[in-house]
View 1 (cartoon, rainbow, N blue to C red):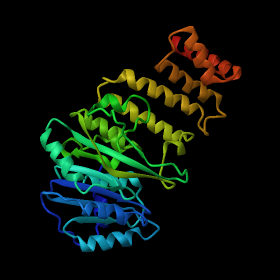
View 2 (cartoon, rainbow, N blue to C red):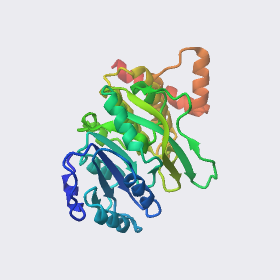
View 3 (cartoon, one colour):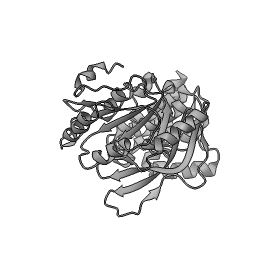
View 4 (tube, helix red, strand yellow):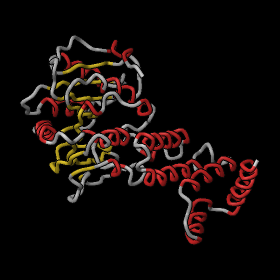
Length: 342
């Protein structure tokens, strides 16, 4: 997939270094209240190497673009900003900027997050330089809740966080998440180019980290060096659990990860796929369609069937809920068996 058509959105006349050690990929949308904090936390980094900032502003409805233009005007040697003339969506905005990055290492941060330690970049570069077998590294981060819940800030990683992370750690269960986006630094050679299937996955974090981990382990630094804002404008899994297109794309994503890893983690991915097929039964589009529900239940069951009579009883009770649904399923299976026998 080619994103060169978005090059026209470049703002001003940036004069970036030809050979940056680190590329910082930033995307923004309606972040006027946050983007200054984000950019200042980048500009305040104390480093002994050259870096560049590749920034995509996705046609915000507030004053975000104007703020970014001010920074791009002041720091043309550091910032290459793309000011979108129309909204292209977070994934496309990210991919265009990400593929523009030329550094040996890449860091990605959304404009409503920020770094809290001026030595963050230096520490991570030193780590990767000292551990050439590592595909990436990440550090601890703090979650600040701005979702109206009044919860106290928490750290993402526990005190016993593993010092090295591998592909299987991202496949323990669906939506496994323990790495703040702004906390990750990766080797560009392992992330460019990206496989075609990645471009069609709505989620970026999990598949990207598996792609990296397949090239080498991901190291952990226990220092808390960034903040992840959990705010009302964010997109979470809970927003989409009842949307069939979203769940279908998750099935595509994990199936693609399975193929990409040559089915080494099939035993981990099958229960994840099963869970998503069961979720499709409850999607708005499928609730009134008993045939579809029976089909998705069948797919789920074949992926990871219960082993004992007790397990079957619990499984049917949990996922079918009613005798009517069970009858629909049994009728469906009977018809399917007849078709198979033909």
